[in-house]
Every structure is written in structure tokens, then in C-alpha cells.
Image 1 (cartoon, rainbow, N blue to C red):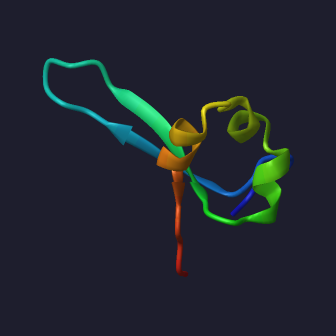
Image 2 (image 1 turned 90 degrees about the horizontal axis):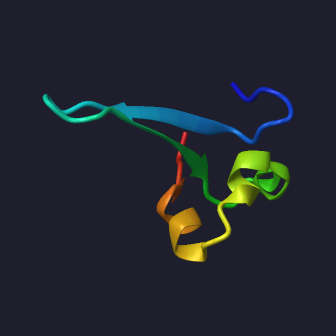
Image 3 (image 1 turned 30 degrees about the horizontal axis):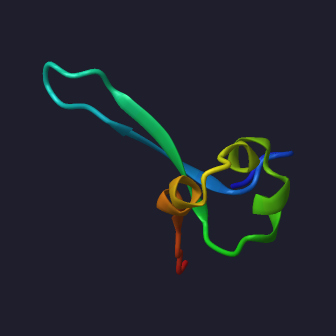
Length: 58
């Protein structure tokens, strides 16, 4: 469920023994709230933004 003022997104955490935990977020491709999401907009590099934008079929 989305929370204001953020666009819908999914939190991911990856742990590998002996390594620092990686925490990131994935966004729904084409969602209208992406354009106003403060975290999503902060990703200025198009390739980096595309890497956390995924197609999502409910």
C-alpha cells in the first residue's frame, strides 16, 4: 500500500554472509506518482533509475 507522499515501491534487503547488507527500493514502471517521488527523482542517472524501475503485474 502506498504512503503519502511516496510513489508505490517495494523495499528489498540482500544479505550475504561476511558482507554489508544492501538495502534498496524498486518502483513500478509507468506509475504516475514516480514523477513526484522525492527519492525516485533524486536518481538523476537514467540507467540507475531504470535499474530500480520494474514492470509489475498484480
